[in-house]
Length: 388
Length: 121
Image (cartoon, rainbow over the protein chains, first blue to last red):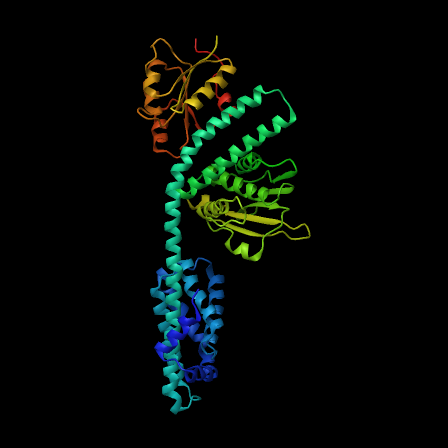
């Protein structure tokens, strides 16, 4: 998080004074009528630059949203108040650029457009007193420099933390992958021993319960290992025509759950065959159902719905647990983030990974209505087949 | 007559457990703890089913099958592995005789469903 110190330091270095702030505020009425043109120029430049335009994958709608944001940003430029709150708002830009993969060089180009358009507007203005021309242009240059410096700094911070995260995951991944494979052998011994005991021990309720428990925990261990290996390997989806309905119901039923947890399967039988990676998709379902089961603290219901509309396949997993708080929601899909004392923080990260590899989306929210609980909604485009 | 089964795994406990389970199913089971040991058996013992691990010290399971298939061309060959995405799996599929690859830890019912119904005459 950039601190106020960063802003103070920048202002001192660039010699941005309270007078400059006052100048910016005073120029508002003169510059504001030109904001529309600045925004248009800005997006024209992006339009003719394939590298920048490629980042805007959300179509015209996204561009419109971005234009509104840029308008708001220009308002902030002539806001006259450059404090903590201003810094916090501005800091988002650098982070967003890292997230959407927009290279730093476009910041310079973009700022240059803003800067020259605003200078031109000031020159052409008949309302701006001539004796204020020099301080006006100077204030404009200074605030633009500060803006650019904040963007670069926050871009750098976000970029470094992303690289560190990737390195950390790669290391964890390598270690985990070798341990994971090693653990599967003892698990296989346990699993076969449990199988034999189950067949040989005279049936008695408590013995059966504990044998079931052992078997269930072995499955759980293996799920954790599979998640780790899949995350560590990061392989592309190998799509093949898959009977989704069967994969979903088999995967959901394979997740161990206490007796007091009910599982509802609502599968639309008219689901078309979809090209997905069956192994990854199975893991997606297992993790969502497991996550829902673990949110329930021993009792409640999990509902799995599978349906489709014209564009997408929709998979929803809901539970009647406590739901998701806002701060958890923001980090839910981060690798190694967990709210449980014994959670690995891999399951939902893997879910997001799988969904992204299938060009889909995953959203976590709280269920509507009084029942409470969380709802995870996955959408995968059906049109994939048409593209190949 | 009971099925002749050969179980090969360097993990002795797993090999023994599998032998026990298959014996309970009425099979006649021989275990080996390496591919070399499995190949050391007298040539006239011809298994109906070979269940082998893939990665073992020394010769791997795929190479073992490549050699056994000459002796027992009618046998059913099953592989076991802790590595679900292993380069060796591709070699295994090229052999063309592997009926299934079972991931560890094994789902025993899946294994039992793959047992050949009767002994090769």
